[in-house]
Image (cartoon, rainbow, N blue to C red; front, side, top):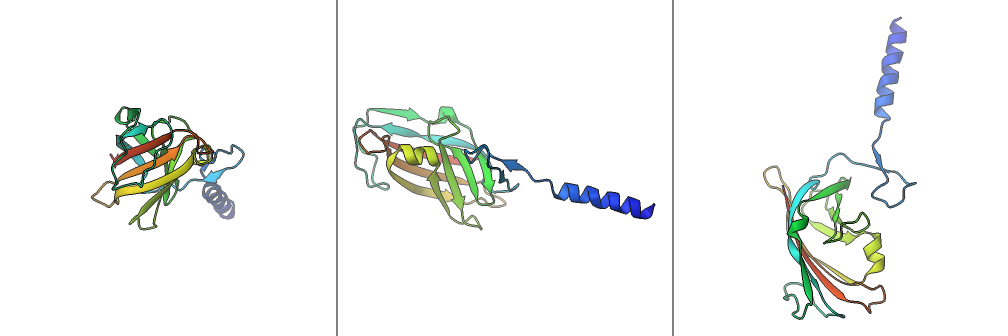
Length: 178
């Protein structure tokens, strides 16, 4: 009887240990499951501020600290899209909605060093292939600690045509963890 009880307990432990959360939503491939790490200091809700500057045609810009070029034809204020939620991908990478695109296909991919001392970012596959002349700048970054929430400002300059013959856009977005 004791052996039967121990084997039942062992089976229950193995079953629980073998359970793994999977997500295919972030990969864009519904047939591919990716494990989810349960903890990342950048995960959570962020208030956002900033603008998207839209131009007619291409614009040359060297990036910060140079000012955003004049001559933009319109702007989009980003605070009405606040808050945004950072979704964990793994222990050092999170995904956030890119600019004013409210689509699962347009994401920032923020990656930190293992100690969260630095941050960098890329764009998900759809904007990376549909846009051209993409320049990415981390303007500022405050790392999360036990007493401080993360905050960072990024600026992205891109052309909305993969051949570079479209219109330029500059996204200036600040994220403050809540």
